[in-house]
Amino acid sequence: QSVLTQPPSASGTPGQRVTISCSGSRSNIGTKTVTWYQQLPGTAPKLLIYTNDQRPSGVPDRFSGSKSGTSASLAISGLQSEDEADYYCAAWDASLNGVAFGGGTKLTVL
Amino acid sequence: QVQLVQSGPEVKKTGASVKVSCKASGYTFPSYGITWVRQAPGKGLEWMGWIATYNDKTNYAQKFQGRITMTTETATSTAYLELRSLTSDDTAVYYCATYRGTYSDHWFDPWGQGTLVAVSS
Image 1: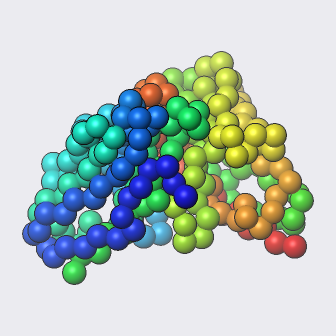
Image 2 (image 1 turned 90 degrees about the horizontal axis):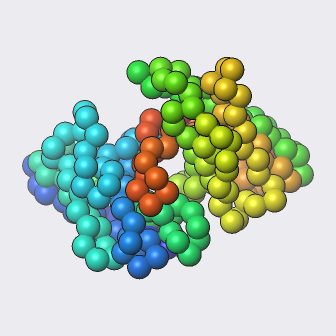
């Protein structure tokens, strides 16, 4: 059981806006920053969002992150077929004294 | 550009040990720490720990304490993960990645291609 909770699946049609939630607690998201990773099928994870809402160079601005209290969200606007992937949130957890990952959300583009 | 290349797949017997390597290029090795994350078949990501490459200080996930060792070899810009007393539950793809930032505000980028470790009896 992950300390960060994500919905196991999400879906949308091309062009739509989709959001993926990540729920935590004061020991992680409530006091630490959130990172998001994208894992395309059969590949290694890739950094998507860091420090809650920062995009690395090369990541399209269709991807955005936000955080409020003990929850965080990843939004994808103008959904494209190549966005079909697994998405993971992560944050330091003070209780674990380590990095916690969410269970992952499988995004399907219909 | 920063790149991490990992060693090839491994097949191990229950109770054995495995050592996976991760060779870095494109930057000064002590500039970034190295973290290890694994992914069991069909499952999510699991953080194993990290090592600060400038002083070899480690932080291991509680779950692996006592049977994990992370090391580095600065001369060859290579990081190593050793996991001992393997069971079938350790069958997974093991990834290395550079970690940036601090413990409270960190991110992993880029990642290696992954190394499959299969454990059977």
